[in-house]
Image 1 (tube, one colour):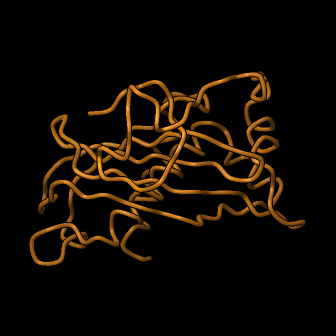
Image 2 (cartoon, rainbow, N blue to C red):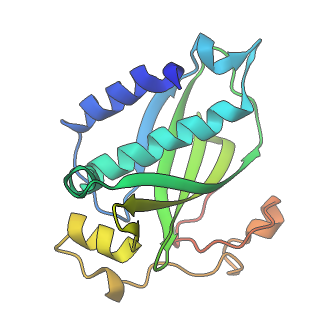
Amino acid sequence: VMRLRLRLLLVIISSLWRKPMGPFDESVLNLRVLPNDVDVTRVTTDRYTALAELGRIDWMLRVGLFRTMLKRRWAPVSRINTIRFRYPLRLFQKYQLRSRVVYWDDTWAYFEHHFQRKGRTIALSYGQGVFRGPQGLVPTGEALTLACSTLFLDKVPFATLATNKNYNYHKKGFVILLPYSSTKRS
């Protein structure tokens, strides 16, 4: 936990001058592999999940959910994370973490975290998240509507099934079905 506190602080501070974004936009963090990220020469598997949390936090900050979260005493909760590794990240290499919401239902929001180096996919992670408030789980639509009051989130059709002919996650080795937006990934 201690190892990411400095990065978390930097994400929070940098969000103050970075451009706000909508819930469908992609958060991009430019990062570098640090000595505490590696186990001998490669990034450890548990570190990818922790870094994905940084992507979710950046997304929450820039969408405007963070202020709402503090005001209403909500806490972000992550339930399921799955990741597929393709190539290793080595010490001091630069990479990008691209995070976005690909789907939400009444309770959960589903995030995609795309780790890239020089345009090449290093790892692809999916996570399921929700806010927990004093009265229990907060409906995702309520959280996003409060943060992005100018949007009519229930009226926006933005996701189709992953079995869509344009992009099939089963061909990429995934065994889970997740909705996605129409942007095709390499």
